[in-house]
Length: 382
Image (cartoon, rainbow, N blue to C red):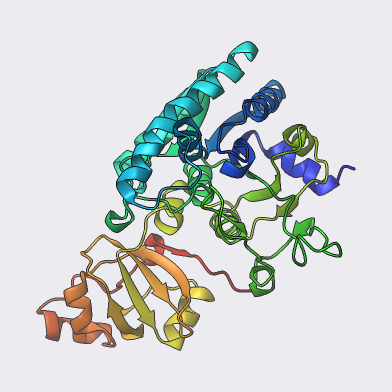
């Protein structure tokens, strides 16, 4: 069954980012499922043959390494986890190259860390590389560089759902497809017979988050909660996203044809410029600014800049030019932006009117703490 809205979205999606999870790519014993990879390669070829370009974000390196080493459980210590990923990554890329070559495509391995994309120049270099690979007819196979990513050093994306959303924003792809071991978002526990798939989500609100019913364990790191975070990152930047079953052998051709499969999450706004995507949805904030109700209203509803008078509390160690998160009165993030002041100065001038800043600092280099041009609202309101 096709749908007019999905047909329109598919027609505009000249570039797709597809993410496939560990549970889809590996068997129960942890070994890579080559038949599933062959199946996915054929579908990727079908997408390219339709005149579109496609980027694949693929999990499976750790799972592949576990299978190669005969390990039954995912390592918990970081050195062993990274070593297993290094062993599995070559196996994973070899599998894709073997599956894609009969269709005349080459697998181009791209390993990223969050640190690569937090520096603006490296972010742009990554974007240019991916676009050039697409021009050359290759299919980029992107994964997190697990061998060097460390949570404590803020070099990890957390999971590949988030990485896929960041890649979607990086190349401004109109559609992200998350291929999972579930068919989509259900209106109840997906294991209950009475639960049904929600085919379209027009707005990502608390009622949608309340539906999350994740099952922990196994070889993957993600779950529906991480997928909804990817939904937020994409739809807040102006793109659409579909969660569908990676075990359906025709899922990608069906999506390209506009058929109703999985759950479609509609964009929440007009497409953002590349720089705004980097500010709002790529870089992890170095600090947090708690705002009062007036500042929250000015930012969310009136399109204003942030002034020192609206800041109630300053948290974190950050310098001028770093990205900070802005929190509303209930503690939830409402926006992100580039700060004109470091944390030491902001602690001294928080709550002050602009005319009082020079009395405290000796000068007032900026009237705005975060200018509207350098800010992205991440929590939209009607």
